[in-house]
Amino acid sequence: MNKTTIITGITAILFTAVFSWWIFAVPSYTTSERVPGMDNRPPIKPVSDIVNIGENFDSLGQMDEILTGSWPHFRGADFDNINKDQTPLAESWDTSGPRIVWKTTLGEGYAGPAVLNGRVYILDYNEKRKADMLRCFSLSSGKEIWRRWYKIEMKRNHGYSRTIPSVTDKYVVTIGPRSHVMCVDPISGKLLWKHDLEREFGIPGTARGRITPDFYTGQCPLIDDDMAIIAPGGKALMIGVDCKTGKIIWQTPNPDSLRMSHTSIMPMTISGKKMYVYNAVGGVCGVSAEGDDRGTVLWRTLDWSPATVAASPIYLGNNEIAVFGSYGAGGAKIKISKTAAGFEASVTDIHKATEGLTSDQQTPILKDGYIWTVMPENAGILKKQLVCYATSDILHQVWSSGKDNRFGRGLGPYIMSGDKLYLLDDDGKLYLFKIEKKSATLVSSKVILNGTEAWGPMAIAGKYLIMRDSRNLICLDIGTKTE
Image (cartoon, rainbow, N blue to C red; front, side):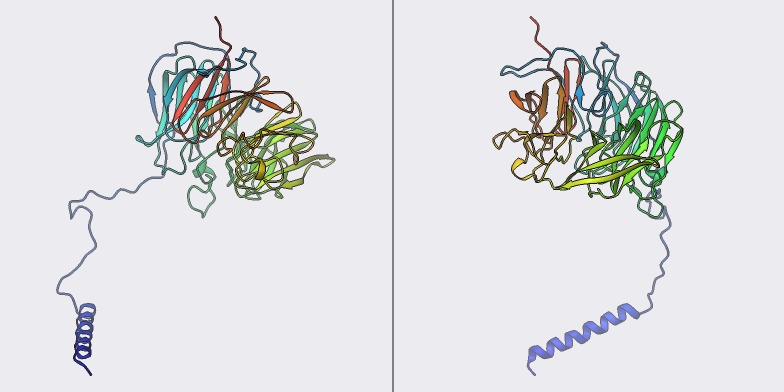
């Protein structure tokens, strides 16, 4: 046995002896549970998960001018993303592009604007104040008139706000990033009522926030006949809230445990019956929107259930609905049949993103029997192109912009007015196309914003186009130039 081995052995024995004494010896001191205040620290206060929705208000200015033109909710007055106003719009732009009327800074997000009676309403998250706020601007000048807001701690989750308010002459309804709903007076900003969907409709035994999907709420509220229509998932698939009182008038049971998605409820009339169509996580449903059975499920299918959906359903006519999935899920067609017993739904087609009509984020536009969309990155040879499909065949495009005309990552918004289509790519470049039934011609383009992730839906009100990137809201004059 060499000297090194002997030293190592002695060291190990000493270490074992000392360690054993430290573990088993009776301490010569006593210990007690820390009592608040003994170490001069302030008492630990439990953090409440109750959010006082709409508790704060800032009056910032007076209305300067009431203009015509409106975009009252997600996808405009008729929920088709087509502006019907007759205000003449420019047929093309020169190298300077459309005139910038005003611009303002926002918190990071993708929430789009609603416009009514010369006012622009947008939901915004102020990171410095840790506040979810509804902001009201003048359409003509961009001057901020008021803010209604409340404190809520949130971590950045690929941005914050994603939804568009719904506004009428009497009410503005919003859904915040964590599914907090509030209704305010559109002129004064007075808080009328509020609901916390996470607290009221959360699933017992699960972590708080189960109601809210990943990346925060993307569902835009709907006001129909002075009733706010919202799909919380959880304990209720869908609810109808009286906008005057805030009272929940009806709740749709949720036996299939469908969950809130990033899509929005779309009103449709199928076989003479008005219904609210919703693509939830887990399935698609149609809920009665009229009569004594309002709030009752008319039909549902669980055969189309991608993990993530963002683009909302569109009605193709002929009792058919097109639905879309994100991250390569592609699209599907659902047939709604009227029977003696009521309605039935059957999925007649499911295709991948490389095989037919789809959209990762923006809801396609249907006009005169043709559907327009920007294909996602995973759509094969058509990736990031503007494309057109006939409603009768959503597997084979009738037109595409071509491999030399791709638009960002294929996630930016697009909007129509007459024969014009405005397309904004991810980086803030705006394109103007002229639509000729089932084809399009690029007329003009201009870099408007030098920002990133310009994903928020656009709005047209009169001669104004309101758009954003992740940090800026901007208003453009796209009207015909006058001498």
